[in-house]
Amino acid sequence: MKYTFCACALALLTMGCSFQTEIMVGESSDHAHPKLVVGITVDQMRSDYLTRFGAWDDAASPATFGEGGFRRMVEEGFTCRDHHFGYAPTYTGPGHASIYTGTTPKVHGIIGNDWYDRASGTSVYCASDTSVKGVNGDGVDFEGIVLGSSGQMSPHRMLSTTLGDELKMATGGQAKVYGASMKDRGAILPAGHGADGAFWFYGKDLGHFVSSTYYADTLPLWVVDLNLSGRAEALMGDGWHRLRDESVYSQCLPDNNPYEGAFRGELRPTFPYDLQALREKNGGYDLLKGTPGGNTLIVDFALAAIDGAELGQDDVTDLLA
Image (cartoon, rainbow, N blue to C red; front, side):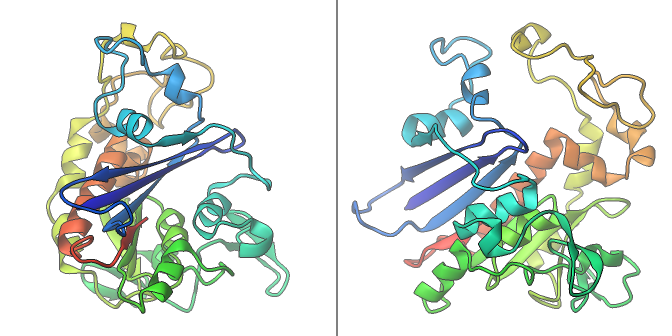
């Protein structure tokens, strides 16, 4: 089986970088279509982080990247080192849309995370859509009692087609296209207009992945199963600790520095973090969005999607963005 992994690192107000690597598993010809394309966007990751935090020449160094992840992408794929943003401001909404449409905000219409809409005379959010309703494990949230306006989302403000949309058209609708993110715009804009589903994490007291009626009136069973697995609660219980000894982080600023804000209820932004103790004052499960636990949860979701939606299981290329 052949997989294509695309990782696009988007930086806010800084330079970004992107990687693409193809990993071959089993028999495949040089010109065979990839079974599955997985797009990964890392917010605020500058290209120099790859060399600044990776001891590439010393495999035994504890600062070296592991065998998977970034090391695999760089060594088995290719790195684009001279990327430039052709627009400003480089907020995440325009970034997601630009990566997957291949054009700029002037064309795809996502000019910010929020902007003033002259037609309605109000400020609008890049993924908001009052014509749809939120969807959680119990079905459609008609009155917004559970999700409020957080479920009323769709890609209708985006004016261009995305990679997923073109893939759908090129395969006569046979390709499966899904989007997933801890934030709604990070799932909705990359997935495009014709996606089979886009799912984002709703924290607070729920801690579940949700969607909207733009895609379907119910969540797939594999999403419901993940939501009910207790994974989010377990990650909250794990807290946030350094992975390595403090001496490994010599290229970083001191743990207590003026450029980081502390969580509500703490005086300093220093390790370790007891997420259970912090949850009440910091949005409940929304705490996970600002910790490595959020990344872990997205990986869990991606693996569940590959299995539950049977992505990459036939000869038609699928996309998980």
